[in-house]
Amino acid sequence: MTTCAERRLLLRAALGTAAASAIAAGWLPAAFAQPPERFPDKPVKLIVAFAPGTGSDALARIVAAAMAPLLAQPLVVDNRSGAGGVTGTEQGARAPADGYTLTLATTSTLLTNPALNPKVRYRAERDFVPVAGLARTAFVIVVADTPEAPRSLAELKQRLADKGGSFGSPGVGTVGHLAAEHFLSQAGRKAVHVPYRGSGAALTDLAGGQLLFGCDTLVAALPLIRAGKLRALSVSAAQRLAALPDVPTVAEAGMPQLALSAWWGLVAPAGTPPAVVATLSDAAVTALGLAEVKAQLASQQLDAMPLPSAAFGALIHAELPFWTDFVRQTGIRLEF
Image 1 (cartoon, rainbow, N blue to C red):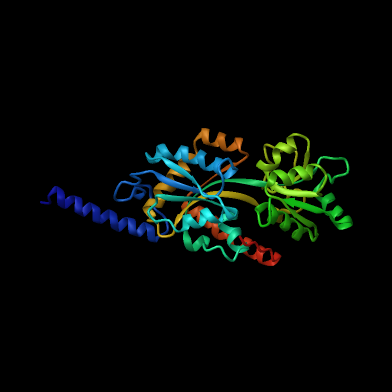
Image 2: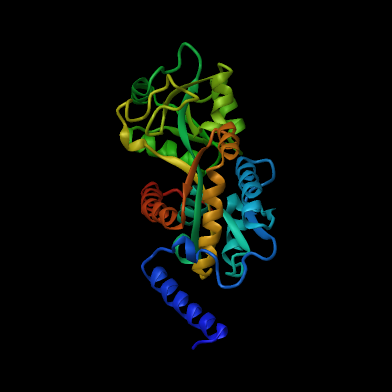
């Protein structure tokens, strides 16, 4: 007859074997999402590699507030801005791999910055483990809302062929810059790049007629579109956007290869225990399913992207070679 203590030991051994098999198979059932000891038992830090008040910061605070009750611990946003997101992301990569430091990852910080800047010391698949996808937003190709500006993507391509032109971006190497360069590459056109320090100045000059076109995220461009200052020619989403129902997708405009988006997600340092990652991933995905969180994201022109760890990792793995190869082909370099 076994004692209570012996039965607990046998159960623990059985659970350990099952969990090890599940991890080896590449997934972790809900029954094993909680690590052997209570996690978390103290606040979790969320590094945001951008300044307070930015779109990334707003997203991080929405998600952190929703995840905290699910984890029974606060998620404390820690803004570490600098070098276009490199500074904070590097600090996140070097943090202890115990689950108590997460980093808000973006398309630019995780995928394009390492390709653009040889001095960046982290790599997406070497230094981080994916935790969860959070949100995404489409790009929109815009021109000034004036009679002489192009009224379609086809007209923009023809104008570039006939007269050339210039485009503005939030800065060299930003996803807005790269998305515009991708459009030019696929269209077989050239244009003069005018980089700015942020979307606001670039879009303001575009509205004033100083540039031919621009490519930026919906959240950046929508206020000027609604104000009648900018005209949206196409959106990079797979389907038309509720915010711009009359604007065709790039596929409808004859350029399906331009279907790109900018996204945000959570990552942890490489080596973080799988059970800890599963706990954090479950909390993030559950939080994104809450009606109030969806409404808050929609107010920021963001679509929820509730991807658990494995699915978010698959997205990173799929997009990494595209952006790396594209940056290499363009020859764009950026050093901080």
